[in-house]
Image 1: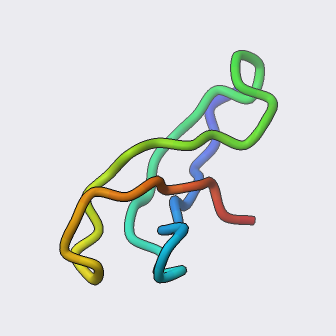
Image 2 (image 1 turned 45 degrees about the vertical axis):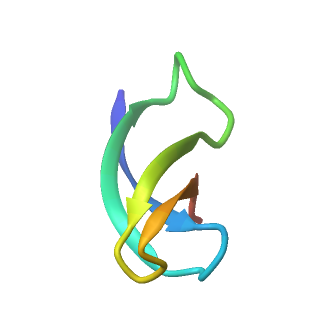
Length: 49
């Protein structure tokens, strides 16, 4: 049930993080606040396709 997803920075569009999510509990795309090493600050990261 858990699938691997990639998180993408909303500001610089870099793919920074890999994560797992349960599609049964979270059917929509998730958004997390993570540190982007390319921007040098905390930004919102969205689930990439």
